[in-house]
Length: 270
Image 1: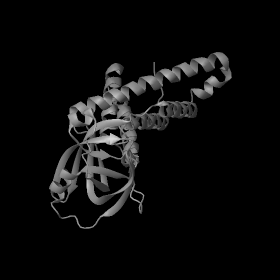
Image 2 (image 1 turned 45 degrees about the vertical axis):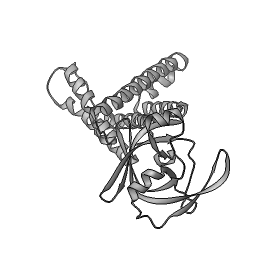
Image 3 (image 1 turned 135 degrees about the vertical axis):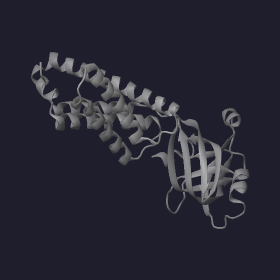
Image 4 (image 1 turned 180 degrees about the horizontal axis):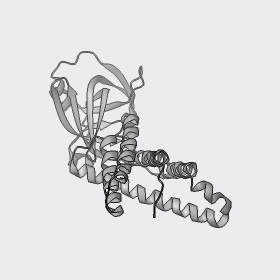
């Protein structure tokens, strides 16, 4: 038995579905991948998935090679994977969403086949599959809840100088620099004095409100680069405003246990 494969159509469908899956995984990792890298990852996964079809060998082996190489191409193309643990964590999310999306597609097709038999041929086509995939992506994307707090590793970079601290991704941090509107992170004064070593001269006034104090002003300094590591995936943020807190930023039992020294504004990951 022989099958005809239309490579362009198969690539297009795989690319779109890969992109939907990567967008969902990216949302789970606080948007650590850029839009361009997501597109490149989806394209790499589609190409590597199709490549084994041009080889000789058992169909099952070729399918396995295509699946494994496709996953590797998608993840390494889209994310800055820093460790094997991060790769397995991302793979788990990607495979989970793949099964969820595939099961939902089959369920929709069966329902349509019973209720609207005339639409079945359209939904099994290229545009039907991509349309259902887009609809399911929107459902999964907007139904997912985001955690309010998460501990991560952060590296402050100024030229050759680096300082690694424990950071808290806190949705309660809504500070912005008033002129540019950029999100502001809050750094412990002890770390600031050690890292800047008195070299900071120019600063921006960052107004804030907090519980127990109606209003106040923090001094904000521009940090050339901030690297965040979330579940082993690195996110690089450039020209980040860092406000210096006169009070310890590690309030709360969880923060004290983790030694948190930086409060990250979640808008940096948007």
